Amino acid sequence: MFLDGLDVSMVGVALPSIGIELGLTTTSLQWIINGYVLGFGGLLLLGGRTADLLGRRRVFLIALAIFAIASLVGGLVDNGTLLIATRFVKGLAAAFTAPTAMSILTTTFREGSARNRALSIFSVFGASGYSSGLILGGLLTSAGWRWTFLMPVPFAALALVAGIALIPRDRPADTGGHDVFGAATLVAGMLLTVYSVVSAPDRGWADPLTLGSFVAAAALLALFFVIENRVAHPLVRLSILRVGAIVRANVSIVALFGSYLSFQFMMTIFLQSVLGWSPLEMALGLLPAGLIVAFGSPFIGRLVDMFGTARMIIAALTSLTLGYVWFLLMGDDQPNYVVSILPSVLLLGVGFAFGFTSIMAQATAGVADHEQGLASGLVQTSAQVGAAVVLALTTALVSGGSHAASSVGGAGFQQFQSGLVLVTGVALAGLLVTVSPLVRRAISAEAPAAR
Image 1 (tube, rainbow, N blue to C red):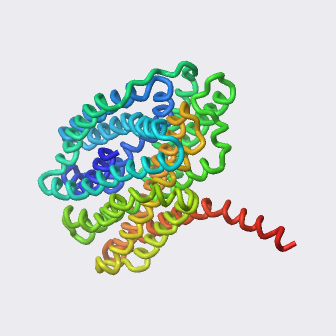
Image 2: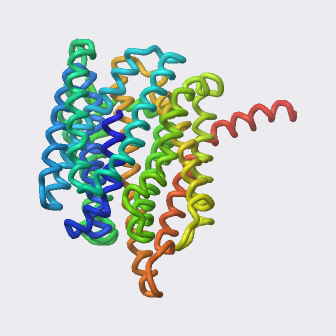
Image 3: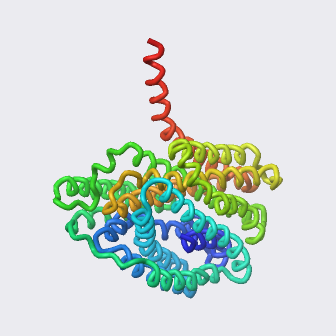
């Protein structure tokens, strides 16, 4: 978890420097992020289910070794396409490490306060990696962006040694067949879906190839659902999608990750490319959000025990929405950091701290141990695919805003306004979905009293 946070934040800081050296446009730069998302989001469900069937320790260690090798190669290549390819391979590896790590945790700790506390600690490591990555990314990018790709290698090697020593051996599942056709259609459908979304802004949403890709992806996913309803041992037990709390958790993670990562992408470009901040200055400017998550997450488990996951998710998405609205209203071409930027950063830190642990707890609650990999893969798939969709739309809006602003005398804050409106709407939509069952229950409780 620390390694994932470290890698994501360091690469985010390095994007403008990568673009300058390799000659990549803003649209091309999104592939540095979405190349990773493409592999990650495409295979997450398969990764989680594979861990359930073949053994969590084995799957985790093999995937982590591949992640380390891909990080090393990424720091050595000198071509934008090859760099994106290494990010794709890292995403494939993370599609197996992330749900496997999550299912190791949820099968080790019982549902309730013990698991909530473990998830809080899980969040601390992710936030610590993210915060460390901001500072390290700023420092290393000043020396050369390649160091941001090479830095995760020793951390991955350390995690691999620790995993061999500390993760208990487990046996493959005694029951449950391998749904080969379901896996093939799911992986193909997910990969094509994510690819279609992230390539559409560059190619055009109405382009025949874009529309054909979406139709083909929809057909593959529809075939997957048909297969899952008919095979004896499905890759995904579809009845899990009938649990309202789990579905709402997956919607909430789309709102959380989709809006947050897109906002970070815009801020990275705005602060460095528009305002001329150095990578380190930009990292320090966004650092308070990571510190709030790192130092606040240990207490989130207790708050979840006190108030429940739904109320904590509502608080999280409310904080995120307010953070986006604040910067949308207060930002300009020469923003005052303390007045315009810092309040948004603090609100986003609170929102992420409250939201991540609470959503993960809700997404895995009531799920049997032998399906924890599935539940973990499902919620993380929602996070990554949601992030890819929102980021692709945000990139299209920012690119369009840049052209419009340039035509009237120079691109500045104006080019990011439509993107900010989008991320605000995404967070607000997630909030409304989470609030709706509480509102319905309140109305139902008041109805008998009124009669």
